[in-house]
Length: 494
Image 1 (tube, rainbow, N blue to C red):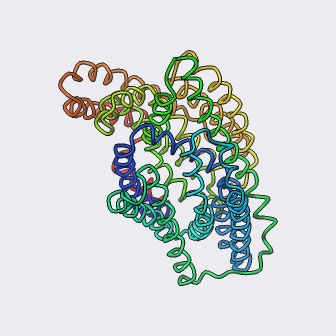
Image 2 (cartoon, one colour):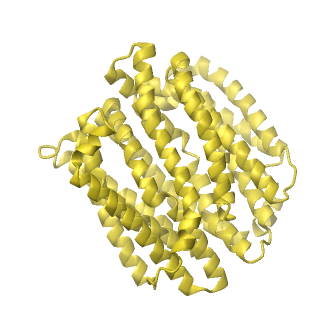
């Protein structure tokens, strides 16, 4: 456990800095481009991610898991073969997609009603190739538990992207239109990062080999790829259906509906994903760890998964309380948009099932049960489609958040059932108790926030958040999530 804690600390430290840069960058971009243009980018990304999912999405977890297993068994030949096979498969799919769309550019207009989205899509298309290289090589370091290189690759990607975007926006504004500058910046930064990763890969002793592991890579990554592909299809479905429903049922103009979707998907949702900086770091550490333990006979698997789930629940509850109580103030402070704050406060409840769903699916994928997470996702998507088709007609943009809450709850329930079926686990109600107490804390601090809001957003946050933190600290002690200082050292050493 001590080694896991050290790796988690390394990944989290770099990830927090990286996500912090990304977070500030997204706020800057949102302010510069505006809600409507952000909506255009979200619509474009929903289609782009559909094709990227085919080429890349299932590869990272598969390569990291196979690398960890072959590392534990000392099978270097199979490890190199898996990396080579993954690169070839991903690059061939990406090249095929690029060739088709650049040969017949009018095909892009089949997916978009706005010509600006078609142009954005064609600008971003080559990043499929760089993403293929990035995903495979980075996953190789992930599986070898070289978390420093793995994390620094993401940090370098974000920093170079920020620098490139700043240059394109401020220095090339007379050459490139502002709405396309971000797309060009992403293309340039992706190329630079891909080249850097290739150099690091070979300098660190990485080698390619005959791709004899191609069948195993395809078999393992296929369920994950189809799962992400379904997710991308859902994203495209939402980006097309939701604005149309807002126009027809609520009388918004096309620009207003696009702006509402831009707020929801480009501003509020990134905030709701804030726990991923911590939970995502835990997933990064646990996937090769669980895979290696499973290859070595499955020692202490249940303990590792239980501790990861408990930690995820604690982080998610803390973020939920902050957003539920002070979401209006936080959204208004960050984006200078009251609607973002109102929506963030309402959507705070999504954080809980979203985070727990992430760690349970990670555990199943680490055990080589990608087919089970695929089944869970498909069941969840059925509820998501139904929710997006019906709820926004009666709830407006809030139907969007409610639909995603239902999706994550259903998927979490399915994953949790499958995980309990595979591994005998301890019965504990401390997680449910912490969630219940967190809801009560959010309610109390929300009432306080309603009285302090007139003092200004900053003052209100300075009053409410410390109160929420104190109450949450007490809740952690009561529910047993926070061990006594003397017990914490033993907890880490286990």
